[in-house]
Image (cartoon, rainbow, N blue to C red; front, side, top):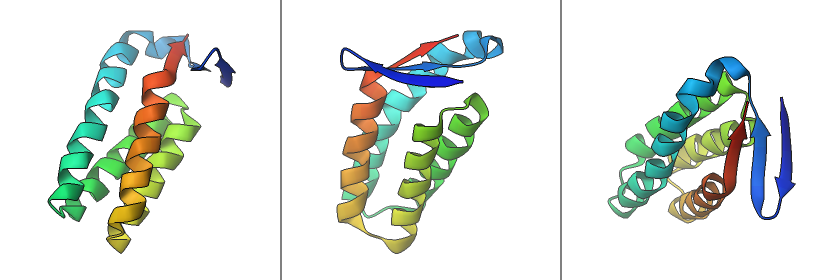
Length: 104
């Protein structure tokens, strides 16, 4: 589908068959950053790896390439136990999700 940046928003077009699932998907993605932030503070890398994998898989299902890539990067950083990189990725992820606008 497509992606464009418009007035600070990141507009992504997904298959109309996903329309009913998108509000819950976006709500869940907004919670992810807070949960991962807590996990990195506690050094809980397995949880971050799991969430990164979940983000990657669910984003791939909807064709959200940038989110999929962020999920992959979080998974990799968690494997390396690189808390600095994880914090950077969580911020990037949080910024992206806050600007994301889905269209069908």
